[in-house]
Amino acid sequence: MRRDLRWLKLWLAVGWLLIATVIYLSLTPQPIEISVEEGDKIGHTLAYFSMMIWFAQLYQRSLHGLWALGFIGLGAALEFVQGWSGFRNFEYLDMAADTAGVTAGWLLGGTAMAYVLTHMERRIPD
Image (cartoon, rainbow, N blue to C red; front, side, top):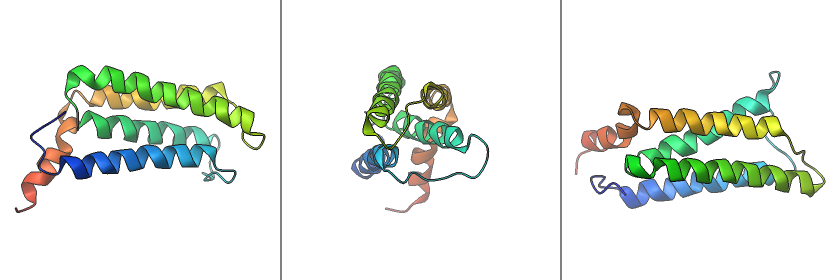
C-alpha cells in the first residue's frame, strides 16, 4: 500500500465504493443504457479500467497483477451471476471488455497515471 498518500483511507473508501457500484450495476435488473451500438461493452471497459487504475494508484506496482487478476475474476463471476439471474444475460464479450479495461488500467498503472492522486494531494493545502 502506498504510504505517501495523506488521505489513503479516503481513497480506499472511494475505491471500494467504486467496486460496490460496479457490482450493483452488474446485478440490477435495470442496467444503465448507453445508446450506441455495443454501448454496454464501452461501459464494461470503462468500469473495469476505472477500478484498475484507481487501485494502481493506491498499491505498489508489485501488487498490480494481483489486483488485475482479482478484477478479471470479479467480471467473470458477475457475468455468471447475470446468466443465472433470469433477467440479465451472460456474455463472453462482456468478460472480454472487462479484461480489456483491466489490461489498459494495469498498463497505465506503470506510468505517471499511477500518481494522479499524489499530484492532486500536493495541490490541496494541509
